Image (cartoon, rainbow, N blue to C red; front, side):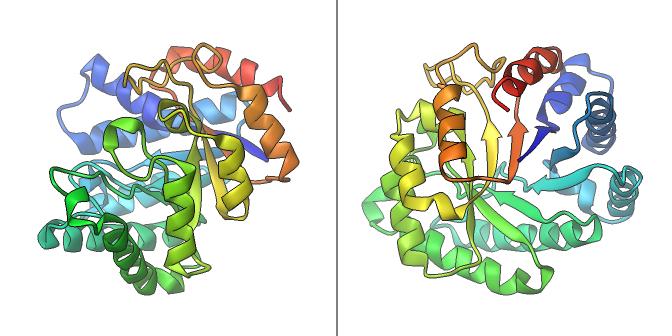
Length: 276
């Protein structure tokens, strides 16, 4: 297992400090701070959120690649953009744009030697469930995406969603997807806080799909649809049970701490390291 951090805390920190007039400079600064913090705290893994994705368009692309490659001791993952995107939408324009975006991000992964790549499935908008085809749409979209990026040698993971999103929430939905997609090149990023928000049976989740879990987001949950990513150990997630399952099924992938506040990272690191 490798403990790491997500860049989201540093993104929020930059936004709250109001120092940047555009998203490109904000994200570049946040990513550099993520790498620096990781090195200072003996962490060798960082997951980078590239949202908004204009950071990876035109000349900005090379700035991002050069920044990532200037920290060779840090193993990188990418978390694909999710604002305005969806792989389960019934809107064909949004669906095609989503797939095109994710294909582009997969190519960037190769250029920074990122092996793990997380995407959101999208959310169930108004009337979508009544069409009785949200899961089928996701399966078709994932097939199209994987066919387009198959030469990039990536571990592509779908992430479970919080309750507010209305789709891809619990082990029954997730297991059904993996049973029906019939591919061996799609995997799962498990967000512990999202599972807690859905009151999911995580023992069943691991029993059913443990072979598919290739990435873990360590996130706590305060309930009430907050999804605020508080200090680890301060919310409803039973991390003792989380690590018991990790040990039981011999998980050896990344453990990415996803918090929204930089100042809460040191205590979270100290808390999580007790379980190793």
